[in-house]
Length: 199
Image (tube, rainbow, N blue to C red; front, side):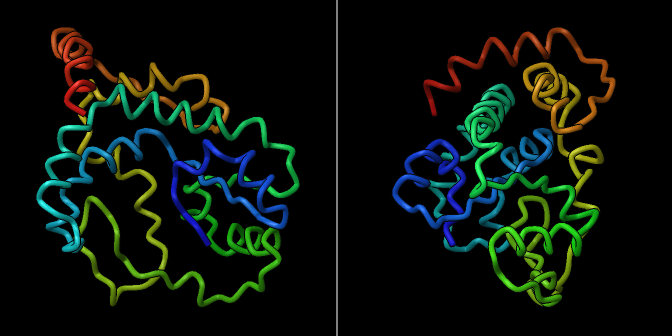
């Protein structure tokens, strides 16, 4: 099992080299992805003690809402040509949270792997919003709308929704109405090239 997200850009090569491979393409609300990327630098303090201070700084510098939105679009677009490939399956992260048994059973069937209820007893670790609690197990349904409750500014939400609108609609991610400060919005776009140079 290999879970490098960038593999979505090499699907043809993977399927050509490994004809028996099964690819599960996980799609998540881009606003939730944005919150995760925004807070990723905090993982060191939340339990990822393997993360260096240098990596923490790099993650802080790299974050920009427009960059995250464009990367989400690119990843979703890279997977679309494989929608009818029998060795390829797309799963929404939110479906695992809301319908864990049903969704995991369909994944197991696709991967030709026996389903066991214990598979749903995942440790609460790896979040960029909460400290690791590896002794706590199970699926946390509240993770689906965490971005709506805290962490993202209205400007970040607006940039994400505008940039990802078409593909969000295809995956049934509904936009919310936000009123943004035009000066803050302009500033975010103005600093984007400088953030990319730093990255």
